[in-house]
Image 1 (cartoon, rainbow, N blue to C red):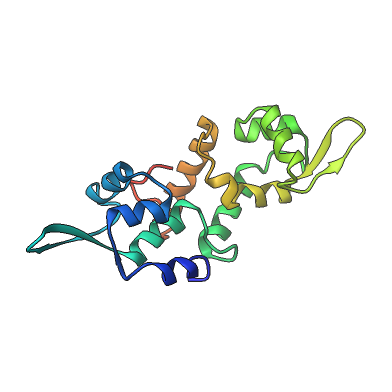
Image 2 (cartoon, helix red, strand yellow):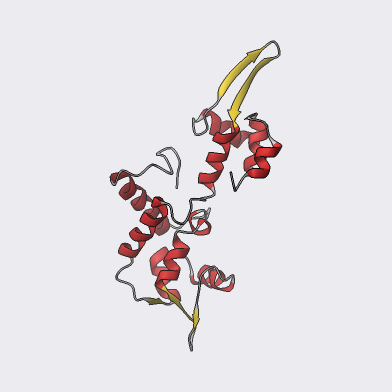
Length: 182
C-alpha cells in the first residue's frame, strides 16, 4: 500500500487490460500476454455488451511490486540473498576494485564506473581508481536497482538463478515463479 497509494485512489477494485497497461507502463499486447500466460489472474465477465476481463487491482500491484523488486530490506528474502552473496564472494578482498566487480558481476568497467559516478554504492578514492567496500557492494547487489536491470549479464543471471534455487530449497516463498524469468 505504501508504494502504490495513488494508484489505489485512482483505479477501481477491478481493472481492464488497458488500465493494467497504464498502471504497469506496458502496452496492451504485453498486458494481454501477462493475463493469458497466467502470470496475472483474471476472471471473465459476460454481459449483454460482450465479454470483459476483470483483473484485481491488488494482483496487478503484486506483479508490479515483484517486477520492481521492492521487497523490504529486512525481509527474510533480502536477508538470505545478502547471506548468499556474502558466501558466494567470500574469496574476494574486503576492499574491491573495479576489476573485482567485473569478475563478480560480468558487467564492463564502463558500466561499473557509471554506477560509481551515479553514487549507487559507497566508494573510497584511491591513488588510482576507487576502492569499494565489499559489504557496501553486496548491499548494492540486493538493491532493487541491480535486481531489475533489464540487460543482465550471463553471470548475473547465473547468480540470481542459483539464489532462487537455494531459496526454494530452504523452503522460502517463490518471488519469481518458474514462469517468471529473472
